Image 1 (cartoon, helix red, strand yellow):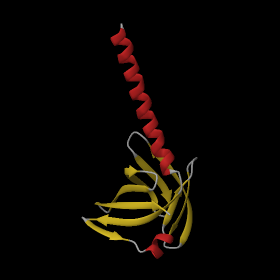
Image 2: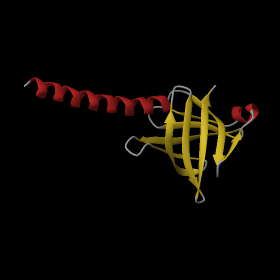
Image 3: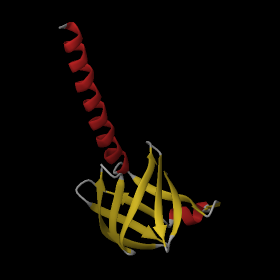
Image 4: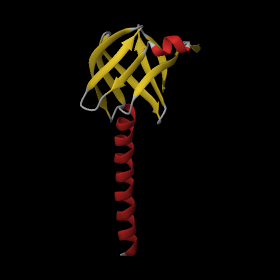
Length: 127
């Protein structure tokens, strides 16, 4: 009987941890203004100068609103997070895009985007 109670407790705890992590990712994504720090394509990493970082940013608001600036041009769009596939789906200046979430922390957001058959990794940070 003790083993059954312990096993049930472990299973419930595991599910709560998984749900909490998924919720945490969405909360982290929507926690502030993300400035593009670098882009990587074909193994070549290009760091953006700080002036360009100020002109290229995105904010994912709770409720699906997206605000951003691309090369100094502000825009409004929509976004949603597919927790199961870990995809940030956006609809903005560039049309509809799916960005695969690689990792997200309090200060870093890294996504992968397929463009013209190639994979581009984009690293963002909060400023």
